[in-house]
Image (cartoon, rainbow, N blue to C red; front, top):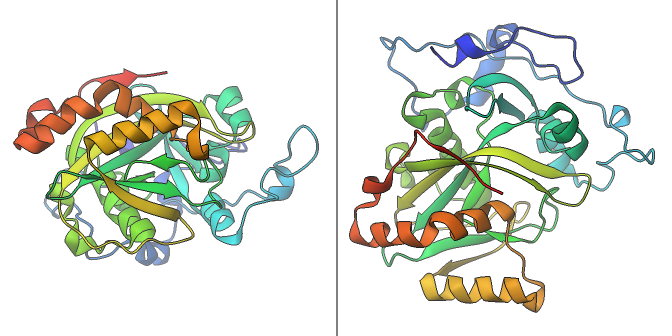
Length: 298
């Protein structure tokens, strides 16, 4: 079954989960670049047109106290929260619709509607097998200023990022966000070099109003790249070896220097990362690929 055959029909619910066919073809041009890989014309996997964005007024999204939960957002994060449409999935990673990034990260929506969206986490190593970490910017809506893996974001509800064959849509999204967040050109990150190792499902509140509920694809790559972080997204970066990461974990556990790690990164570290790091160094990382299992972690 193709991804699009799984999509829900249009509804009148507040989450505005619409079918792909409702956008005009003139809106497509903004979504594609030559760096993205799409199926060949002869491929049996096809997608209808893209869906029109449905904005959600901040005046209609109030907390129990009457304050709009987005009142403190800066302009960049506000735009992303309302313009980006995440892919909604069930716990088996079947596409069931889409919703705004805003709704997908409101804890009241996550809890009341069980909104679960597809995500990815990139682990980029250099030729010395050091892992690139980033500290999220202070303006991030969820988990500001925490340290995490190289890049964490979402494939969007657009044709190039809905391709499910070989996780191609997720890999296209990873290439896009590594440019957005870290300034790494697409040509330095060929999508066929991302290795999807596995998937995790987790839920994590951030500050009471916001949180994450994600089915997260874990993508690994070994490649030397130039990095030019976008300050709207990234506060700091560093490469770490295993011992330096263990030191970082110890500081986070002890609450030293106010250092915090993202919950998804910590789940990957505690369950998989160090044994996978062995395979990164040995050049045998493909031996541990398991895209059949969805690990439900808490």
